[in-house]
Structures are given as C-alpha cells and as structure tokens.
Image (cartoon, rainbow, N blue to C red; front, top):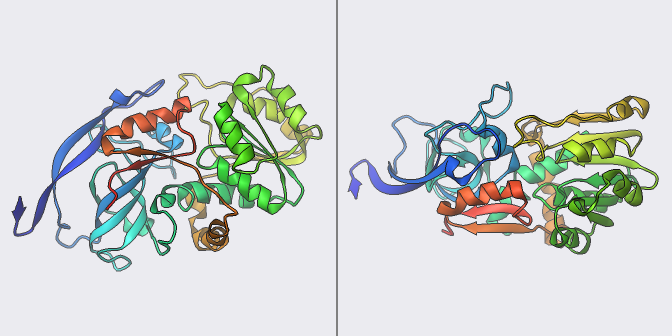
Length: 348
C-alpha cells in the first residue's frame, strides 16, 4: 500500500498498558500491529528509522512506575510504545548529522519503525567491524555505565580489590574485565552455577560465588576478601549492600549503578550498616550514565582495540522477534537471561 507522500507499512509495536506496582508481568505490555507512513513530517529535523536490535535493561522497570525525578528518564506512557536503547538504520533524515543508510544507537521505540524526534541524543555508528548488537550493550549504554562507574566514580588503583554484584549482567561482566585489565583483584556474585562458571572461566574473574547458595553473605565476602573490599560496583542493593558495608576497607568507594533487588518491592528494604561509611570513610556515589556520554569517543578508543585483540569478551542472550520482547524484558527480573539481553527486531 503506497501513497504519493510515503509508503504505508505495517508496524508491530509493544504497547505499555498501565503503571505497574510489584512484580511486572508480560500482560503489562501488549503486542499490537498498527500502520505507519514512511515519510518524515514536513519540516521535521527528526529521523525515520527501521529498528534492528532492542536492549532490555533493568532500569526500564523504574520507568513502569509513575516517576517524577528531574534529570531522569520519563515513565513509559500508558497506551504508547515502550521506549529504550536500540540499534536502528536511518530511512530518512531531517537532521544534518545523519543521512539515509546510516546506522545509529540511542533511544528508540519498541516497534519495527520509529520516528526519532531527538536525534541529537543518538550516536552514529562508525565502526561496523564488530557485531551491530554490541551497540545495545558493550558499545552502548551498558559499556559506558561500566566505564564511567568504574574509572570515573570509583577512581581505581592498580592492585585494589573489587567486588561486583549481578556480575554476569550487561554492565557487571564489563566492569570485571576492565578491572582485571587494570590490574585489580576481582570477585563477582551471580545467581546460578552457569553464571558463576562464566565469571571465572570466560570473563577471567579471580573468584565468584552464587549468592543463592550462601546463607551468610558477610561470611562469603570475608572468604573472598579476607582483607576487605576497596571498590564495590553495586547493581543489586538490599542484603548484598548491607553485607558489603561490613567488609569495605578504609576509604573504599561504592558506585551505585543499579538496585535490581529493590525494583519490584512494594516496600524497599532498609540498609542497616551505614555507620561503616563514616567509620571507614567510605564514599558511596550514585551516577547516571547520561552525565558521561561526552566521554564516548574516549571510551571507544580504549575498548575497540581490546575487543579486536580478544582482551574483552561479551556474552549476549538473544531473543528473536518483537513479539517475544515482553517476555525477554520480564525475564531480567527472575535472572532468566545469561549475559546482555537483546531483542532482534530485524536482521536487515
């Protein structure tokens, strides 16, 4: 079906139904088919794109609730497509930085075709000699979060001890490898034997443990860090954070990247061992990756050679088809994914 001012195509979308409290369900989203005219509105400086890969990220759970946090991303809009990071091909451009045929990563819709109204927040993909899906994670937001959180927030020194929770996830697996390449002693926690094996045998962590099999997290950390932890990269929160606070070294640093154990709780868990921040002069800092995107060229300069030399490896958990995207996203919160969760919308 076509018209003079642009072909009209079917456009499968993942629609957000309504705000969520408690554990999210696949039925909080609906896969729906609509139509879209493949033409930019007159005078638009936006981009018309075909989505190729979509990123499933734990922070998206926070956007399922009604948010009013200045400087943070907005809540999803009920009745509209879910939005998040993705990789897309440009079909038409009204923006000087992009032209038809370019590839980009940035915020897009969970749909086959999207109109991106803020292209200045997207990154043009210049390096296509690595898998394109890497731009949903390793070379995208997750990579930048690992880089900024570890190098900029934690200010590591060679030989320091580093602990990472949710260490086999999109961000954790990279923090661990960055820390090892930098000369640190690295331990990670994860939620299955398979993930613990990945940490030790594929990502090169010095040690790792399955937190589900540890009745006493404080004892587990003392076993791995008899002299304490210099740097904690926090992805989990709750009981893990409390146990870590008992094991931090003097002037240790904690980067708060995520708190996945808390996102689905009606009432967040309290943290009891905060006195250790004072007694051990520990700095704990939350950060948002958006504040560090100006460092993206510097990040690529460091990481691209490491990928090509095989010094950095990356594990993805790939789901085929937009219709399976809701299940892929919900699976993050039960730890079903192994590695970075990616949804393939199109291989073209």
